[in-house]
Image 1: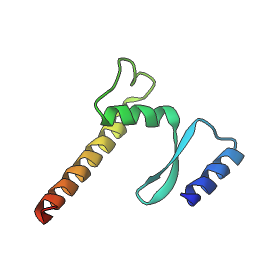
Image 2: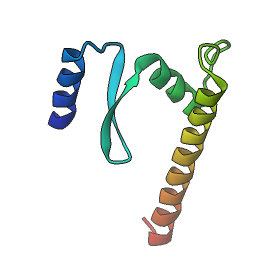
Image 3: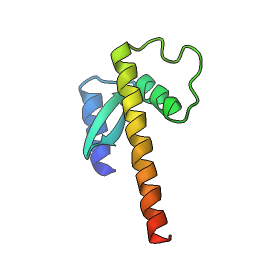
Image 4: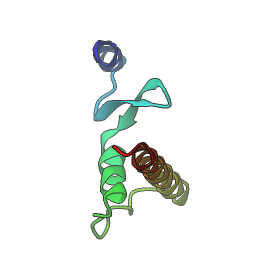
Length: 86
C-alpha cells in the first residue's frame, strides 16, 4: 500500500487528477475514476441508464471482458475452496 501511495503522489506531481490507484496483473496503475466507478457497477450488475454513454464500444468491450475474467477467477476460487472442504 505504501507503493501505491508513492505512485499516487507521482501521478499528482505529473498533474493527473480524477484517478484511482489500483493493482492490476501485479502492477500498480492509475485508472480514470469515472471508468473505475462504472466498471464496479458493471461487475455488480448495477449499471444505471446512461452509465456507458461516455465510453467507446472498445472501452465497453474491455470492461465486459474484465468483469468476465474477474467472475471466472472468483468462481475458480470458490471451486478450489469447496474441493478443500473449507
